[in-house]
Image (cartoon, rainbow, N blue to C red; front, side, top):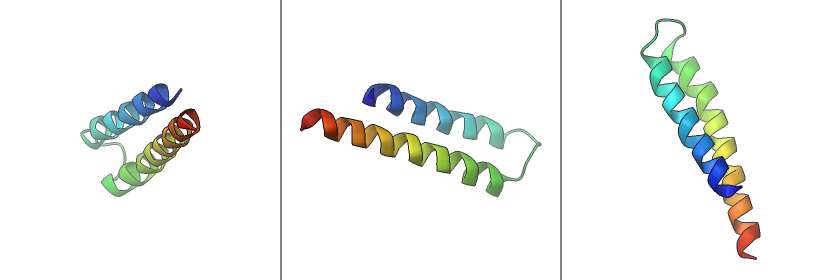
Length: 54
C-alpha cells in the first residue's frame, strides 16, 4: 500500500507539471491544490510504511 501511495503522489506531481503548461488556471492555484494532494498521499505512504516496519 505504501508503494501504491508513493506512486500516486508521484503521479499527482506529474499532473501538476502538465497542468502548469495549460492556460486554464493560475500557477498558484495549481501548485496549492496539487501540493495538498501530494502531501496527503506522501504522508499516507509514510504512515503505511511506518506501520509495516513495526
